[in-house]
Amino acid sequence: MQIDIRPAAPLPDDGDAAAPGDELRLAYELNERANAARFGEGIYVNTLPEFTALLRSDETERIDVLYAWLGARIVGDVTIYANLIDSTEVADVGIQLDPTLPHGERTELAEALVARGIDEAIALGRSTIVASTVGARTGPVTARTGHGAANPTHPEVAPLVARGFELEQVYRVSVADLARLSDLDARHAAGLERASGYELVRWIGETPAEHREGMRMLHERMSVDAPVAGLAWEPESWDDARLTAFEQGKQGGGRSLMTVAARKRSTGELAGFSTLILPTTGDVARQHDTLVTQPHRGHGLGMLLKLDNMLRLRELRPELTRIVTWNAEENRPMLAVNERCGFEPIAYEAQWQRKDAR
Ligand SMILES: CC(C)(COP(=O)(O)OP(=O)(O)OC[C@H]1O[C@@H](n2cnc3c(N)ncnc32)[C@H](O)[C@@H]1OP(=O)(O)O)[C@@H](O)C(=O)NCCC(=O)NCCS
Image (cartoon, rainbow, N blue to C red; front, side, top):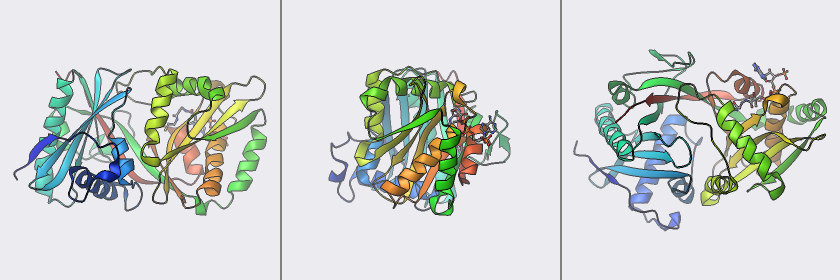
């Protein structure tokens, strides 16, 4: 197979500008096919402007994309994500393969893309490389957490295993169907009563001025409290510019953020939050972070925040009837909350890491 791997052209200001056959549109179509193959039809869909926004670097993260061309077709890609504020020794390298390629060609393509991605990461000066692939609940290689697995002979996985990557962590991808939660209102009311020392504050889009300091603190806690297993992600520090860049980035291409936070009535401090990303197309909202800080756990706040977002979603965007979420397979507290909110597993994602890549 004669593959040519070359860097993506600079992104246009407007994703919709790409005509049929243009590089960006071919890349978008590959991304849609690969997502459907990995998560199932309709679970993770983007418009072209949403897809374009996902590729845009900002002051917090550099994103490099290279496409694998087979004649006039894009049959794969490799993306190198490099944080610019913290974890600056780490690069996250992700490949995508055209699911319509025969097995042998996917194996050959994955080998070439992984090799190129590692070279690019090293050229950026990153000594630790994290890579994400298809995973499984159980399988021949178990994650170092003891939860979740991967198949070392899978075309995406084999090139990593051959280069000494270790399986650190596995994510469970789950979906909840809101139509099946017939007792949502009653559970929400009971949750409010149980957590009567707290009030809920809600917004759409960027965090209002009065909550920005609290939200920066909650994002910093998220980077420490959510399990990252042996992955080299560092604790993050969030100033106001980072919060702005994060929220604008997540809303790229027309998406919006729906956030609910719990505020302790007696002190006014924010105790936790949960955010959904609302796409402009399809019927599936995406769960982003959920966190309750340690002193406020065990009052049903985690559950209440999630139920509250579900109710508000039903009211404001009724066409978004499902929610998809990613959770570390060892994160029992979050999985326990999600299972009781009706989330069911649909896929697994494996997180690999190699240190000292120089
Ligand atoms: C996950 C998290 C939000 C839960 O917050 P919380 O407010 O303590 O959770 P709740 O009180 O709503 O718990 C609801 C139910 O979940 C289950 N649960 C909560 N914590 C648990 C734990 N440590 N172990 C097992 N089950 C647990 C219980 O069944 C509980 O039901 P109960 O209220 O009848 O006892 C919190 O632990 C957290 O912020 N963790 C760190 C951040 C994180 O990992 N976020 C998710 C990243 S994907």
